[in-house]
Image 1 (cartoon, one colour):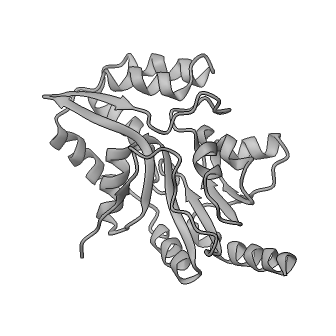
Image 2 (image 1 turned 90 degrees about the vertical axis):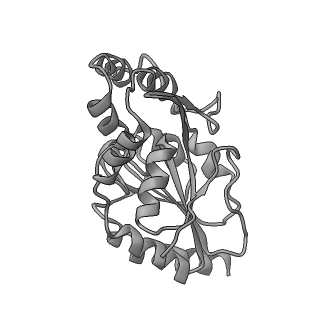
Image 3 (image 1 turned 60 degrees about the vertical axis):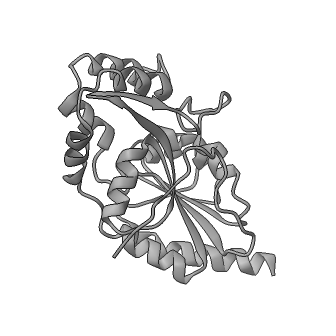
Length: 239
């Protein structure tokens, strides 16, 4: 079975839009669809140890993820086939395919939004035979073992100071009901703009600290009944 993952790296903040759909589900990638962080995997395997010092500055809030990732990717030393082979070993949440099927059956759009690397996202989704729009940072091969990253979804007013401003991407959807499923810092601002949040990890902590309603989750199977109930409630209110 073939696949044609839709890459939107040259079309920032323009998601598939329709007011006819029941809703729009936005899903983070690293730590959410992929069990582990694929960017950290590549850095640990192919970058010198100084990438960790850059990571510490990001963790401390001294720099945003755009500056962090730019500096780290400059340290990456790997051939394209080595990158792809490493990504082939990434474990994914198998219930994500169930969520995609659920969304299709219930007339909802699904878009993958990542502050990681498009090469990682599209390769792994392709392996899953999943055809979805993807918004992520663009990894460019410079030849031999050198790489550079671009940020087509960056916004100077992003409250999360991320390379990909997910709040801008999510806000561009015209759907009346929007859902976010995520786990990390890049999801913070988007969590404040949607109608329903499923969170774990840092995103769950952020929601707790800022009194944002959310549902805890460990896999996508836990989200489906909740989404349906909220859509039904929203329909009753509109009716």
